[in-house]
Picture 1 (cartoon, rainbow, N blue to C red):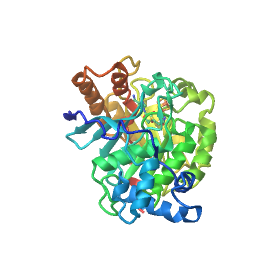
Picture 2: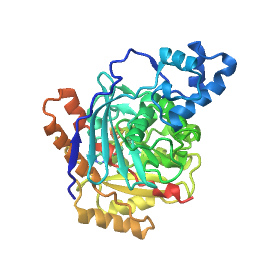
Picture 3: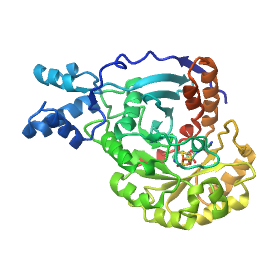
Picture 4: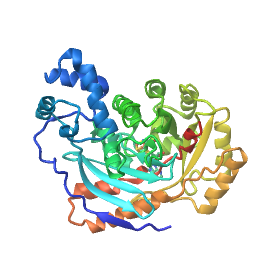
Length: 401
Ligand code: SAH
Ligand code: SF4
């Protein structure tokens, strides 16, 4: 399948050069109340009420200007604008695919740029793939992000901003109750979310709040390469759905593909998953398995995978490998992937192959790069880093109850 793209060089955000004011849109409810009091804009006894009022405007109506908060006194709006901002980060590039996939390169701060991708027809109606870090400290050998040093963790505000930017672009304010285009969130962009759990958890609190963006925790999936000690805290703190990047069924191979396995091996990982809070037949764990030609794609490995997952409420997503320049792997052939999937199907795992949309979009990255030759080198590098960002787990099951 080939996808052609409408490339739009986004106009710089009007607020990009505004003076540095604290941004309220990425604060938790408690943080918001505190900020209002600390700036002396609101008296402590009114803080909770005022925070709730602002929350609705920011997260239900999506306003980015205090002037639009019509039930807030003019004087208070003025005081708010003196201390704070509601501005979105700058969108450096925006791409819209003919198949409806949208991609934004967002500049959070100088040198801090992340990609966020909206993919329609995943989950209930459409999933947003968000990044949790710029770069990654782990070095999975098939992952392009793994070749980049960690630049830094994203803040909760920067994670939430990715959702807000997508909502702006999809024109989904006020937060719709029915017929949403953005129904699911997956933490499958750049970075290892469990090495940034505090910010990921705060972001999930904000995104799932019923008086705001209101995306249910059951429709938020966090993907990890297997940071075992953080699994329980993730479940307890966020009640998010869990996805595990497994990719191999024995330690020798997983040590090679996902070097974190040397620290937390498959047995430890499986024990951690079994103990994940809230795991049930109606809340299954997703296992991601990247299909690498002649590396992990034999029928024997498919059978080993079935054995390994015995007793765990699981679904499996086979991900066709997304090649990148310099990678040492190739994607398994389609017939090999189908043969692998057939073994899983016979064991009761339905339709586990991810459609290779990811590859189309990576090709699109190349197009974008050639369209934008004048872009500075760091921006060009960023555009090549997207491999994991476009591989999105099908979370459709979350919506059946
Ligand atoms: N760090 C987390 C989440 C981001 S990666 C994790 O590893 O789970 C999201 C998914 O994309 C993971 O399953 C990852 O293994 C997979 N992935 C990374 N690079 C890929 C590539 N080149 N082709 C296909 N899948 C890839
Ligand atoms: Fe990091 Fe995930 Fe890539 Fe591994 S697959 S290097 S954990 S982003």
